[in-house]
Each structure stands twice: as structure tokens, then as C-alpha cells.
Length: 122
Picture (cartoon, helix red, strand yellow):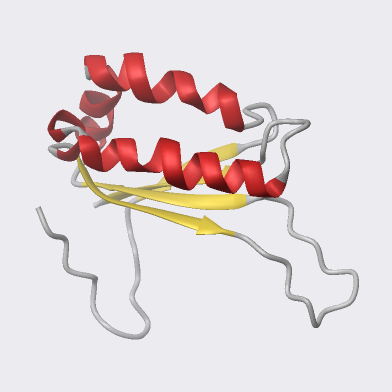
């Protein structure tokens, strides 16, 4: 299993509310809408971050984190080569995300300290 993590910052000038609405209501649903994307992507999770209100001066360096789960690195490549990804999903990133200050990484050795690996529904 390969899990890609995206640490996202919103586009300059965009409010937190605008970022969240676009990310969750426009961008995110596209991954579930297209079967040609779903055949490569096993799970997509968005985490909209809030700084804990009870910790003075606490701030978070990102507006959100996303997890994209794949069976293999090849599936990542296959998904981003899908015509629908290139034409309808990837171009939206620049509309709500500051790509220069956002970061991406991937890992393939999840260790479950409590509970088992979550079931993946195809």
C-alpha cells in the first residue's frame, strides 16, 4: 500500500472558508465521481485543520492534509495519466491551493499501533 500525503495551503487571497468549500465541495468529489480514477485510488481522505482554541498562540503550518491510498506506485502513475485527471482534476489545484508552499510525500509502511488496517472497499 502506498499512501500519499498532501500538506496544503490555500491560495493567497482566499479565505479559509472559501478554501474548505472548494476543496470539499468541488475538488474532492471528483475523485469519487469518475470510475477511471476510482480504479486506481483506494481511499481519499481530507483533513481540514483547526488550531486548538485552548492552546494560546497555537497555529498550524497548513490549512489541510489529504491522504490518497493506492495499491502500488504504478497505480499513482496510472491515475495521473488518466485523461479525466489531466483535464478535470489536476487543473483545479491552482484555483484553491498555493502549490509553492504545499508539500507532498508518500510512504508505504503503515504501522497500526491500535486497531487493524482499515478495510478498503472497491
